[in-house]
Length: 423
Image 1 (cartoon, one colour):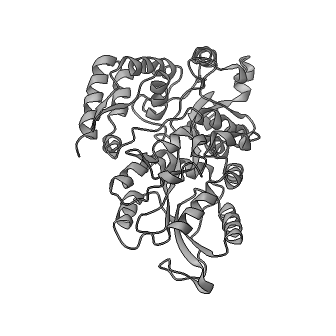
Image 2 (cartoon, one colour):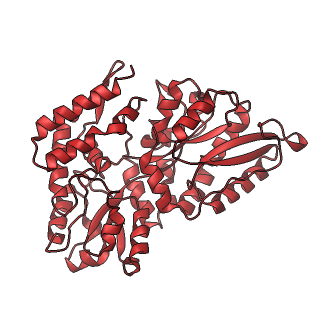
Image 3 (tube, one colour):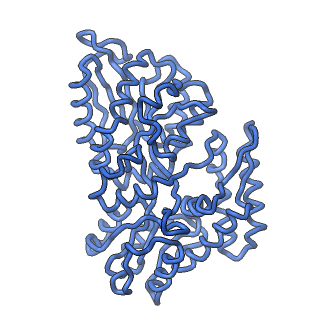
């Protein structure tokens, strides 16, 4: 499954696009000049800046002069089909960056190297759950967490101050609702929350102890009609009403950053990079935007979030497993993770490294939520759900006045059908 959220995120936070680069050595990954082992690496467009890529390659090859790294940049659009074809061929790259929720799809084919015996050496006990869990499939670890990003609340500091609201004091959902009500006055929207922002709704479901779907044996069942998910819907409906967000579209239609840039929106739920887009559209807001983690039900626990991001995988057909693993170990190790987090305002792959972004307001807010992050159901069948996305239709139906229980049952049945259609 293509990770749509991250594809959009990359365009928001990247400081520069990557370009394909190459070095000496044969194109098929065999030993290059001087007996060096050449490995081909697929990284995704804009996942890191050109400057960071250059810095890492220089440092890696200095530490490992026997390995020649050749990076090729891939586009998010159509990457699922391209990776699937590569894994089935005899000409796959040695390392591939993939969206965290795509790993199950690729692992199911048997085309990925099982890295379960490397987890301890890579510090897996501290990995973010939202990256590590979807990187595993049927009890084996195939994807190694690379970096994470998730939604936070982007708010107008000046509007909060005018209303006498201290954003730092908002720790619970009830406090958030109370503050948003104060901000939702006249032409000013307390929050702009499009009705079909289903990733945000999913976070509320996880807060309640529910899930989007549950598994029994090899069968999956939609779970939007559970008491937990219905409580989440009730909260989503209450929050969404404190603004003028459309009930029948998502954050991309119209782009919510453009809506906030018009000056009448106090809050949006977005990745921190969204603030940069707001400021680009309205430079007067550049120093007026702040961030705080999505609040949870209680003050001691932040709101659950969908963890977007990437894992690194090694194709089984690669002829250079040792060199590929060395590359993965370096890029996902503590030293380079800290540098990556600072360079790109990402959340590092381990909870123990959150301090690396302490001076970055947006990234530090993300890190709080990432510690309790989740991913969508870890099965190749989830791609069929997102293809038609009955969750969006469900949200719109309820916000338009439909009976929540009835609409939830209908959506759950659609999820069940989609997830099991290929089994």
